[in-house]
Amino acid sequence: MADLAVLKKRAEELAERKWDVAGLEARIRRLSAEGISRKNLDPREVLAQKEQILDRVQRRAEEYNFILKNCAQGTALALMEEFGLGNMDVIKALTAFPGIASSGEICGGITGSLIAFGLYFGGEDRLDPEAIHRTIMIGQKFMAFFEDEVGHLYCADIIETVVLGHKLNPGESDEAMATFTAEKGFEKCGLPVGIGARLAAEFIIDSIKK
Image (cartoon, rainbow, N blue to C red; front, side, top):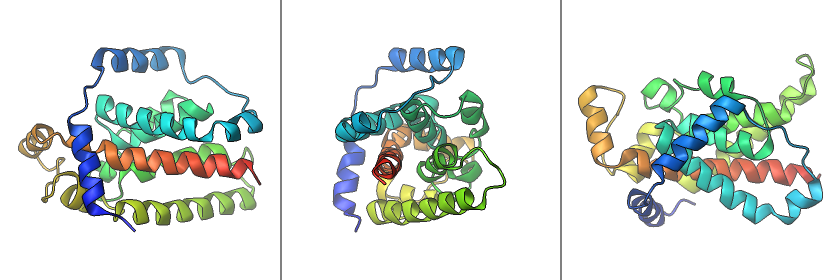
């Protein structure tokens, strides 16, 4: 069950964080130029380092969300980089996904995670119904866990109850975006992004046990 007071406190902590803008920009440029490195994951190492991996994915998702100003891209990139999935074209394709084109719909912390699930669990055979069904079922379970931790699935609800404490659609107008930025919305939106990415990483790691 989501603890609203705790969530708001964590959002405020993100608002006050000192971000290494130059370092983050350099990291994004490197990924754009060199691509996402493929990884041969050692199950024993991954399981032994689970907590470190979860912490790293959460932190990177928060950072990428802040520097890219895009929750879906930030979530997906943190997961893809950690597990060696996909390429930067996937991140480009997620450009319009925050709140589903800033319409207040599903949070990018969810959509970015679902993209990573597709890359990890989807398999190579596009006609394999078992892989499709498995990935969808994992996605549904993940969404239930996300809603339990954050309290909501939709961007508009998360902004109103957790991030800003009042209604605002940053994609509605230039003025709304300016207000969102001034109230440190991008910093605070690292909260659902970090939660989503961490949960998704845990789903991936736990699947290695089976």
